[in-house]
Image (cartoon, rainbow, N blue to C red; front, side):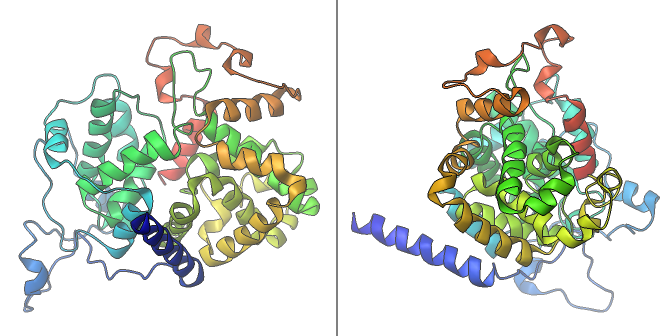
Amino acid sequence: KKRHEHANRFAVNIRKEILLNGCPEDDIIAETSHVPAGTTPNPATSNQTTQLKTPPNINDANGMASGRRLLSKIGGSLPVMRRVEDTLRGKLWRLLLGISNLDANDYKNQIKKKEVPHYYVKIRGDTKRTFLTSEEYNSRVSEERLVRVLNSFVHRYNKPYCQGMDAIAAGLLYVMPELDSFASFSILINSHFPTYFYSDHTRKKDLIGAYAGSFLAWDILKVCDREIFNHLKALPPHTYFFPLVASFQAISQPFTALQRLWDFLFCFGVHLNPVLATAQILVNKKLLLKEAPPHLLQGLLSQRKWMNYRLDARAVIDCAMHLIILLRDSKHKKLWDNIARHSSDFEVAIQIKVEHETGVSYKAITSAHLPDTSAATHNGHSSSNGTTAATTNTTTAMNG
């Protein structure tokens, strides 16, 4: 009991530190960094390096393409070590996510397996574009690592690959070793937000948590700021909130600022994802009010140009904390309860989606109330990719 109490106090102190000061930034040496001629590599790190490459010129399309080594098959062995393999942020995330034991033998067995049927082509289609415009990401994370994590996850848990998973795994690989990334990715998808990347063969509950989260963000905006809500009212919430919520803010750039938003989510709960989405709208309220709603979808609210790549993580987090105080008022009890449960409770997520799409409030809404779209599914695997127009556009936006 004493150990449990001590652990809780420790976690509270970590959350306070992250909220007040943020996570200290690591001095990360890019995986593709090269040692300049005539210099001596640092002996503390050089013995961990087995392969270093010259970074491609990201301003050159051909350079970026050549920097992403073409893969015909996944790697069959454990990855080479990077000069800085683990980071303080990576250790912090694992602690907050509850990662304790790592099974290297199990992961090694997974990556020895062949490309997973039906999903490998989809995985490769996404990984070659993941954070394509981010110099920080591309200088540190190789596509091979990302492919191995995603391919191994599908093998290990017999779950379908859904678009958007690549962005989650990519963010983890940036700050921690591949084995740790696989464990963190698995617990996030399976335990922390199972509704977000769920897919079944009827498409009734595909990405149900992400849809629920986008509707919740719309509800939060309605409660907290009527002026901007009325300005955006003509736009369906899924046209701008869904890409942001479904990607866990990953369409926001720069990449390093995105990592700070994930610090907040992992510290205080991934269920606050819709709150962060609303906070992004409020922080940029003045800019949004200057333009007509239809034009916003081609500019500030565009999936490819979200807020002109000017994410102010500190301002968004501060705004989110004010929203949380407001939402925890007793008059918003139902909304707050839905926020707390939508990422892990399928029935709550379904109820939110049905209520917003039909305008009908049921006492107990289940998946039976959702329309059966299985007739529109061409085969047993097409639905497993979460293939909707909104989802396809979301992934394209996240990938550059």
